[in-house]
Image (cartoon, rainbow, N blue to C red; front, top):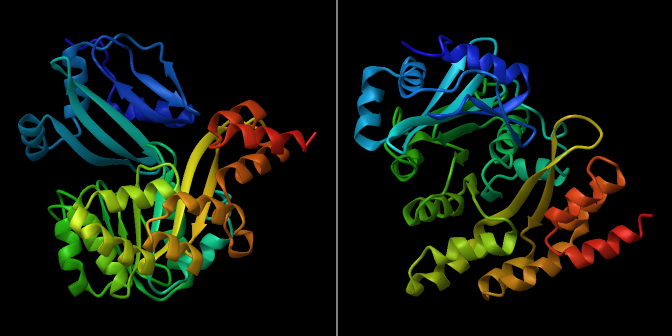
Length: 358
């Protein structure tokens, strides 16, 4: 007999009502929800092994149950009509089943809603090139990408193809035509889908995550052959992102990849989330690198450590450092000085700049 007689839908409604982003479920603890970045234990009963299995397996068909038994990991999406979509990861821990479910709002926020810098609108209208959106897990990369895809959808007549694991935000055709493909359901892998997508006549391609050498190589090639390609990486800034992409390749290929990147890369948008002080919720801080001719030369020559200087002085091209964005958020009283300082990439310089605000 289960301790919790709730259906998964009841728990997810509670998550949305409390403005939570994630629902954590594991044996030996009550359901836990993340609200504005903090984990909060609910006052529900402690979950037993059978509770977790009953609640989670109710949303799995036989094929997915079998896949979970074989792989002990499972990614899927789940939707409650009129409420929200959810990204679900089911896993095993200490011999029992656990899961994390992330709420994905039905309404896609705009570039303006997210306070993304205006240059991102210009980037979205470019006909070709590679755009990388980076940041740690849970920093809002998918939300920013959805906003940019939505901007293209409303302003360009083109074919947008997304490859996701799983599909998160659902897009409706506006000016563009959008096909959304899910790993495991519509295609075998990111690399497999990218290999074949050229025959699907896309103008814009979104790659949910560049996880391996083959996917990265195919994404760069797609940008090189005249497509606008968006992809994500778990890196924290532009120089680190470029180094990560290059380092994936064998040493004998790295010079060639630097050359390809120097030609194809349009922009790197790195982001992090901070608690707001003016209202409940979180706000994103962005570092924006736009590939100018000077930055392309630095990429080609392997001098990525010098890129940060170009970002700091590249305001006329729409660039901004993370610290510049953090200072602006403090000045506008959207985040506290302490929170901004904790996220700063150069704390000493940040303190000097912040002292001029008072």
